[in-house]
Length: 251
Ligand SMILES: Nc1ncnc2c1ncn2[C@@H]1O[C@H](COP(=O)(O)OP(=O)(O)O)[C@@H](O)[C@H]1O
Ligand SMILES: [Mg+2]
Image (cartoon, rainbow, N blue to C red; front, side, top):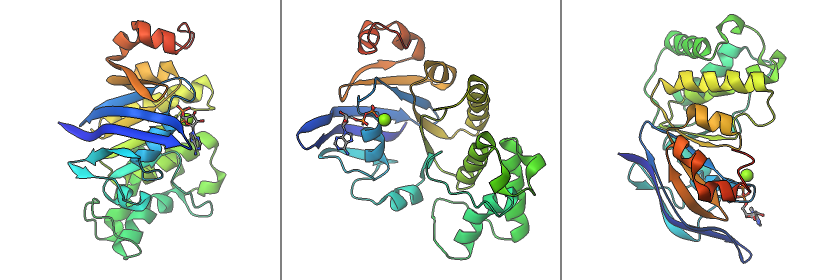
């Protein structure tokens, strides 16, 4: 079953066609990578999914409901979370408190997120926060101030703050951009681990090592259209993909 269905999406910027008739179907539980050279339209497509941009033509359906016209906040409420760009860390609070905040805020009515499961007592919220910190490998630092974390650890914390919202779809925009090979491998391991929760993921990624380590399906975007789609191994050897990447230098 497809969780996200993008149909015939077109988007232009002052006459420049950034996306032309893009169709994409993301299967529930899958890790779907969107790759493509610079300027292919990847960020534009992602922005159309999270409500930062509206397509000129086309439809975006999430769980059979249209996301068109919804604000980024409403799309987030519907269960779509974007990782590594949105969460704000509170530097002078502990890691444990940081992970508790989204749930406490909801419980105390600061905002309502209807996709989150009900968690009532402070103790339960604390337990849930600790189990997520365990998952992302930060349990040993749960009482430290978030502001003192290294960059890599901050990303782990952000991921925990995202997971506590229990999203159905995680969008990852170049999750390893600017990271060393060692940090990239740690992030791959971390994403594999959270993959065990069965959350559907869409990853926009330049780094083929990351794509081949994680994705079950790859869509290749070039000049605003999907030029090829399939299993990662097949995309690696696809002539159209090689050409889009100028002789396969990136593959
Ligand atoms: N806000 C914008 N205004 C004008 N042109 C844009 C804007 N955003 C993207 N573009 C253009 O749309 C095309 C696709 O860009 P983008 O989606 O950022 O590609 P990618 O993320 O694959 O590198 C590029 O030609 C880019 O210059
Ligand atoms: Mg981009």
